[in-house]
Length: 176
Image 1 (spheres, rainbow, N blue to C red):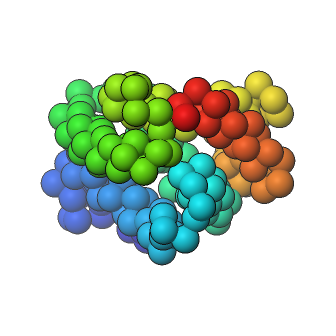
Image 2: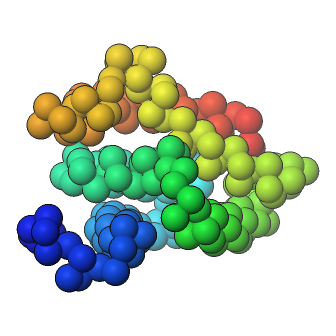
């Protein structure tokens, strides 16, 4: 977005409107990386999930500022101005994940005895926790990497995917 700071409020009524615009723009950009991944092209859910993750990492590497913005929006944003929007977004994401999980349970991808909401919670929280794993395993500091002009991860894709594979293996063992 190439708008002078002084001109921002010619385009946006307030900070919340700007924040929503930035979040939606970043989400649309990320969707371009994952929208064409077809679940039916994979033998199991976990191969599909890994492909989503790998393409998400491509987004992170190509658009580190947007990636950091989305990450912070989902994990540390607590501004009262956007709380309602975030709560609505999380609710919609939960509904989408519940449908996804129900389909996988019916096809044998997940243990049918496990509650759907538990599986959804596990997938969402473990996916978000990849940041913590990467920080612990590689000593990464996402914000510092961005400030110093590096990619969000500051590591090569192979190392990132190895960490993601470890996390996926844990989830697979727990949820199948």
